[in-house]
Structure formats: C-alpha cells, structure tokens
Image (cartoon, rainbow, N blue to C red; front, side, top):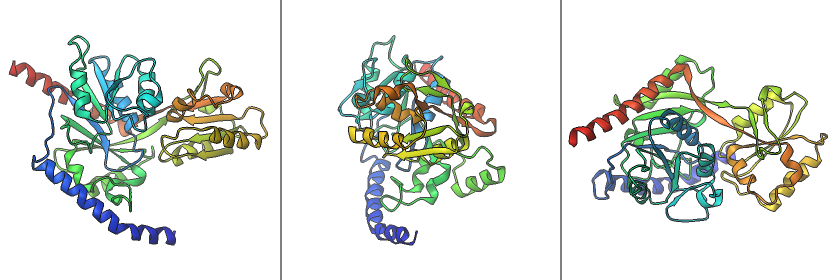
Length: 367
C-alpha cells in the first residue's frame, strides 16, 4: 500500500499537466471559442467524470425501457474498441468488432431500437436526423459523451460509482478522473451507482452534502440488480436462477470489465467454490486466453462447472471461434439491471419525461 501511494505521488505532476490541458479545453468551450452544436430534439447524454465503468450502459437500458413505447429512440456512442471507423448504423448482421461490444449488446437486447456509432457525435446525430421523417429518431441517447463537448446535449446524466465517488478521486493518471470534479456543474442529474441496497439515509445525506450540487441539480442513488443467468449460446443452454446455484457448485467467473469486485462478491454469496479470472475492460478473448481458461477448468473437480461471464464478455465470446463446443452447454452470462433506491425511480422518470415534454411544447409554439 505504501509503495502504491508513493507511485501515485510521482504521478501528480503529470496529473497537473493533464488538468491544465483539460481546463484550457473546457475554457474554450465555455467562452464559445470552440463551438457546441445544439439540436432540435431531446439529446440526453449519459456520461461520467471518471474513466472506467460507472454504470452507463445499465442507465442507457433503463432510459430505453422508459421511452421506447412512446418515442422512436436512437442510441449513439463512439463504439469503443471497435475495429471500424466513421458512422455505422447497427443491424442484425453487425458484430462487436464492427460497432463495439456495448453497442452490440444494446442492439441484441433491443433489436427495434436504432443503435449507431460514430467517433464524431455531431456527424452521427446529423446522419440520424437525415433519415426519412417516418423513421428518424425523436430522442437520441448519447452514451459516454460528457466530455464530447462539440455536442450540447439538452439534458445530462452523470454517473458516479458509490465505491469511488468522483469528488474523492484524482485526475488522470494519478486517479481516474477525465476532468476535474468541478465540471459536475454541467449536468442536470447525478446518479450514484452500484450502491449497497442497505445504504442508510444518513449516508445519502453525507454524500449529498459533500457533493455541493447546485439548486438546479438532482441527486439519485441506484444499485445493481443481478438477473437470472442466460445461456451465452441459448440453443445449447437456457436460463438459471441465481438462487438455484448451490454452495458446492464450482464456478469459473470470467470478467472483462473495469471493476469486477462486486460481481465476484455476488457469486461468492451463492457458491463457496468460485474461481475468478479477470481480464482488462472490453477484452477481446484470444486463443491464448481460451487455453488459460481451459487450464483452470482442468483443475476443477466437476465435469461441467458453471462458466459465468458478464453480458459484455458474452457478446465477444458468442462470436469467438476459439470457444470449445463442449463449453456451450454450461456457459452463462449474468445480466444486470439498474434499480433506484427507495422508490425514487418515479421522481427520476418524471424529470426525464418533463424535459422531453418541454422541448416538444417549445417546438409546437415555434411553429
């Protein structure tokens, strides 16, 4: 721990230089020297201040559930770690390598929702709005675009991990912040994600006080709800409720996410025999990785131990030619859902719907 602290101390000068660069960039946008483009429809940005997983994808999926039956929605992201470039509108033939694993995951789960990728978000939005009037989106959800200031969203939602709140973090590379904590002022809503379900009201009050949000900003607390396991290859294995896992069931847990600790702890709550192999975020499994997994499986006593991975890993493993056929009967993904604490989902929903209604009303008055 002492060595780690000393190493981080050495990174502070680099963090200072990085912070100055980000400050200058934001100053140019705030002074309209660099311009941000606004659009005529609701553009809702879901982002964060920190690099790594803070629960943006579960929030995007929550918003899809909220809005998809009332509006035509498009989800636009840069398609992180895809092996393509430019604007691409996902379809049934898209792959994780074409549009990115998270975009592919959303398109697979919600095939009727438009999902597009473009590193230039302005260009991506313009392409979506240039579609025929009967199919063009009425609402655009921007995934991980809080720092993409060339687009001025109509509404912003900032996610921060309960286990690493943004105001307790440091700038890159000493910490994980992409920009300083003060830039939280640009958001409408802050959602503290991955909270423990037993979070006490006094703890929420302390966090709210420490954040020092403005009067126009709202704070919500959410947790991760783990759903029944789904077969990565549905034609080979079905679903499995978590409560049906026995204490003596052997589990090999594969994670290619930013913070696997909560999922590992969740699996340990169900089984005493959990072996976890953690890979980097958005990991693309190679033949070497598959051999490593095979070696771990050979050390297990069960002929068919449960192989469990995240949804993000599942989309890559499903299309991976190295995955042995015999694994497909016991390879599962654990879906997650975001849930607001203390029944505050209604208040959150009302704020989103009110914002959309205000833009719709404004457009009618301008006609």
